[in-house]
Image 1 (cartoon, rainbow, N blue to C red):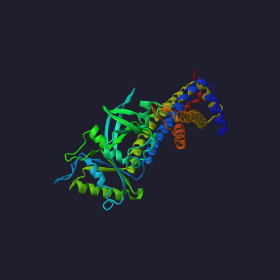
Image 2: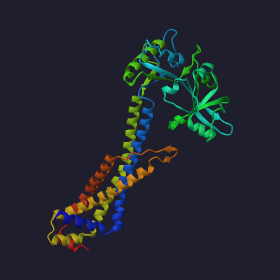
Image 3: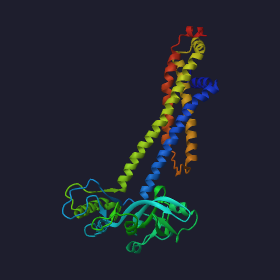
Image 4: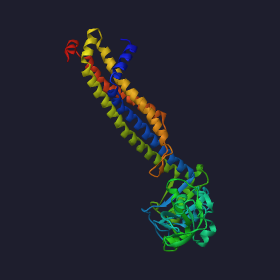
Length: 409
């Protein structure tokens, strides 16, 4: 038989029982649509995280205490402590010429109470340099100033989500709030940055240390959880890391392992990308199980079809059909089922991706990215699955003896 005749015969055969064919296609449709949708969500999530990290700047370093401190001797710093004095020392133009700016950060949590609303928030004690270093901008009012830090002023800058929770659409600037029972005046509201960045409030670091926490060393220095260091440029990141390491080792009089860790945006980005790729692969594997189930469904239907059409196969063989003609016909039927289901699945997956993009699900804005390579891969895998699961029924049909097939009831 010619290829065109085989195609027509296969198409007519699978169309003769539309309900059964539709149910068989459903497995492949769900599998392909699931693969495309889940991978689109995975890639969208990866892009969101990447954009947020890159928005902070590629020239940013984070210095944090390391609980496994080194060998400290003499009257030097404490093994597990970073202080504001350490941050100030990193601005030395002689020993740290690659450091452009430094912003120490003190972190705690607390209840934020307005007149008729309250919420729980992350509280960060910061300096005026925190805003440019961490790329925070003020939407309403003003940010923390050097005068606020010097005077230990009871002022607060609200994250956009906190401002909305406490004041809805009202302007909160000039209002007062209570943070852990202490009265603070709202002087500004931050622009939205997404995720947890909007659920925080900023206060002067000296105010946080004296009013909200007791993070001080025995000699009176203020402990900080993070020192944000901005390098002069992305090209001198390695130099900045070396200079910061040397200065802190000297200040803490370390002879062995560092009592601090330094990370940069690129390392964070690479780690998160690896995590996201693993997560996306996991989602794809789960969705791939649906494709496998769809393939098993095709095999099952093809075996039923061979049994139902035994007499037809016998008649065709008696009229001169060769073994390979029967084999090709049933393989082609399985391929048509899988490719048709895969094609419909791609279309449905693309629609789901488009409809899901930008939707707020469980309080999170979902970003999806339709990937043509994933769609083509899913379509190709569905074809391979159809071929794999269609070979056995086709081979079984081709091996039927014409006389026994004609006797089949």
